[in-house]
Amino acid sequence: ARHGIPAGGAVVEGGAIPYQDWAAEKRDQNYAMRATADPLASCYLPGVPRIMYMEFPFHIFQTRDHVAMTFEWSQVFRLIYTNGRPAHDGIEFWMGDSRGRWEGDTLVVDVTNHNDKTWFDMAGNFHSEALRLVERYTMLDADTIRYEVTIEDPKVFSRPWKISMPLHRVKDVNRVLEYQCQAELEEANGAFERDPLTWYPKP
Image (cartoon, rainbow, N blue to C red; front, side):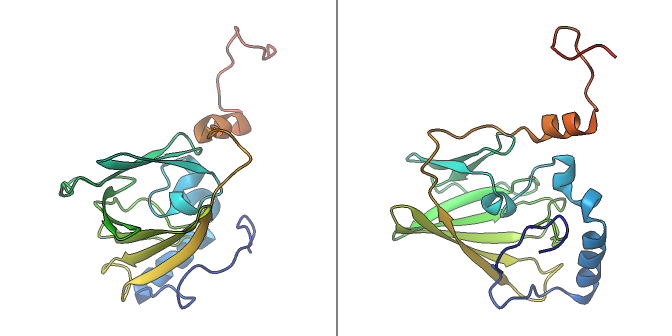
């Protein structure tokens, strides 16, 4: 735990992220400036894998050609294509381009075509546009998915590394609610314009 960083157990296999020397220095700079430098502080999209382990729940839908995820956080969604079509090269996405396949009962997802603007967490851990992820979703029981991600980025890390954690089913809500990051940020900062048709008092 740190100021502004909730307590939690390590999810990195081996306990340390294998940064190249220059990148470790950059990570430390990000950490020092995290209150304002974290892209999430400006309500930018979290990227993958960060969206998967934020404290906001999500809903999974499955069709023949896709697995879709809708998130409480700012109504973000992901589409994982499972129809065998390859990713489109040359286009960078905030949430990457996800292509999935089944290996037995495990959904394996290759996520490519990231931009370099998202972080892995609020501690300043980062990547370049060369990031490639391999996610593995495995049902452990009716209410638990084991989520594993192998992370590869030869521009930033000295070798591939892995994170893993359980994802637990939420049973006490009947739908995914809405958390609008930008609206909450503007209201907290007093940055919105007053509308005379609302209940807000006049200045």
